[in-house]
Image (cartoon, rainbow, N blue to C red; front, top):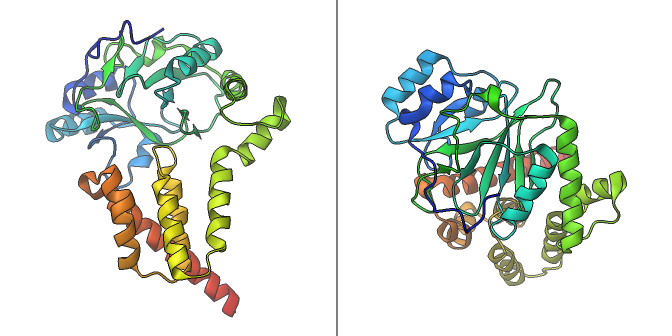
Length: 318
């Protein structure tokens, strides 16, 4: 088990896309894409999870993408399941739960220690969708992408492997995981939350899990924010309320809070410049705007909110 006592910060090796892409492809990790930082900017990249790259495509990418990280895209064509542990405080506990449910894997990736990723192989008949249990961990299987090689944008250090890496470990050598095993991991995770008193679940078992999905801390928090905004009678009250909510953003919740807050601003009649001035300070500047990533997210949120509002107006008018 990886702990602070035996992690040097640079165990294993990691390289950029053009250093390892061919080795990945040869070992059957073929849904790979070049990424800038933690994001893939190539249009239509999620389709890579449905159609693996050809050897020719990878060779062309190796020649062109000299300074990019290497990302694995998940989907039906990707044979890999990744458990991405995103909690620094509880990383060791969550890795223990994962290994108890799924078994040990030779592929453990480190980006921003003590966060870590554990890679497994899908068993025949596998049917477990990508799920996000933020801010603790995520299971990547049916969609999404993770970075496995390159430079971490937050630490400016290489992504590393504790021992083996996909460059020297064929997919066939990874331990298989079944849908049932992941369901067991999910149930163990909820039990761990109850034991730690991190979040309150109504009761153990299937009913308790179902209730957790619909009444998680995140849903409760967003519902409370919505209610608080609805009681604002003046523009000044609403603006102050919005700023309070934006200040609560943190990794794991910031995107959802930003999205629902932008929607509320649009419904209150705020103009684009007014929205951008507030989000610029409390979202874009606060969390960084590498290659305008967060600016683009705000623009998309505004566009989506205005489209939904327009559709509601058309429905009401008709």
